[in-house]
Amino acid sequence: MRKKISIIGAGNVGGTLAQRLAERDYADIVLVDIVEGLPQGKGLDLLESGPIVGYDTNIVGTNDYADTAGSDLVVITSGMARKPGMSRDDLVLANGEIVRAVVEQVMKYSPNPILLMVTNPLDAMTQLALHVSGLPRERVIGQSGVLDSARFRTFIALELGVSFRDVQAMVLGGHGDTMVPLPRYATVSGIPITELIPPERIEALVRRTIDGGAEIVRLLKTGSAFYAPSAATAEMVDAIILDQKRLLPACVYLQGEYGISGVCVGVPVVLGAGGAEKVVELKLTAAELAALHRSAAAVRELVGVLKLPA
Image 1 (spheres, rainbow, N blue to C red):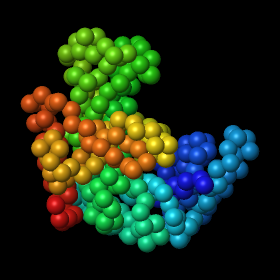
Image 2 (cartoon, one colour):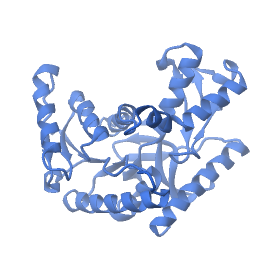
Image 3 (tube, rainbow, N blue to C red):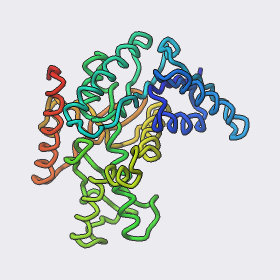
Image 4 (cartoon, rainbow, N blue to C red):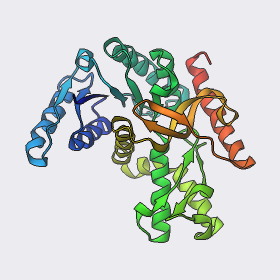
């Protein structure tokens, strides 16, 4: 029996993700949005691509959460972008209302899904979804580290003029200005980048990684990234649906790992059919651990705006 994936939010990220997953042809897809006609139109357009691309994915576009019933995995992309004049707290509260309502509807029809969060501010929205859903922590996961690591990997490959496929990297922490790229764990075909790139250039690549999303926003002038975020989300969906046991950075609720408790933040996890099946604790230097704790503190501050229990 084919798996069922529901994508909440049919905007650029949700629509592009639906295309990527449809072309994988391993699950049927429900695309949900509050805008009448939008998910139906995109769903039909994707369905009509099947004979050309060569997939048999069934795709339903809908405004009704009842169509998501029995979902194995639900990806939540819905929310608003920060507008001029909005404070960070304003955005947290506005998207918090959206995410709370979405999760309540999702859980009404699918009692035990895995929730994959994409809505920003990512870490706070992941913690809100965990609280509202009542699911165990391994079944509520935020997508940020895969995207941030992909940006770091891209900039390393461009710096060295090597294949993107040969570069591995890990970015921990919150999805924002306090993220923690780890140059010590970045390699090119197993060779540490610290042996290939001067320290000052590594620092420049780290800064560009942290600024990665904002750089695209500045270039687009209206809107934000969606190709790379949807690709990063699809990689996590692959790991879950296909039970790949991938070791990937993901936002999960920590319960003492890295000396951090009571907050969702990005760390390496083993991702498989059970969700975030294991948190992997890397041996961090004192400076790296301090940076991760600062990042967790910044997330905790955002979560505080939502007034969630720890």
